[in-house]
Length: 284
Image (cartoon, rainbow, N blue to C red):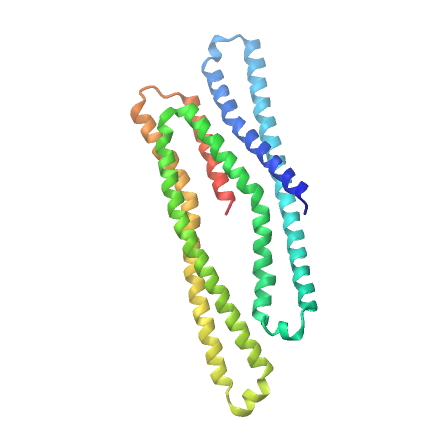
């Protein structure tokens, strides 16, 4: 995976964002067209309505095709990254000396192969997704300010609160992830030692003792994994919940300070909020 692939993916992500955010404008134009359709002739209705409808369909199809192509490129890049990182680890294991190999037990090597390579691949693939999220949030806030005015600042406040909460939850989750990896490394190390010295364990009757050691480490590992899963659930729930709270709070204040509410503006703003919600969840 080269730099050209990453640049192409980021460019397509920006085009996809621009295309998806064009739909709210077209939706507003369609609703306004329906409101004033009684004032137009039959020919004008057919022409203007058809153009708006075809434009909306074309934008949706183009955005969907770009999204699927970007997802395919990210999957291919991820597989290539994992294969390249795994090959590098194997080559390094074959080149190091016997004394140096004693510094790295089997558990650390398995963590490198199973988790760290996958993490590097995820980070590489999330570069374009992160750029998409930044562009989407920036353009969405501009559109919402255009549609709703200064009321959108209430939604920005809720977004800031959600960012702070998700940041602290993510930090605690990462800490427990490191603890899970260290416990897994310790369990694999003890299991490997027991298997390599199984004759001695049977001769001295130490099987139950070593089994209790391994079971104790596994028990702590499972408890840590359960708490980490609980934190992950809170994080994902917040990602889905806070975008809804942003839209509800913004529309509540908008309805309180405005006596006249336009249907086209409301539907366009709802579409923008949905796009923001999908973008924020896609980075998980």
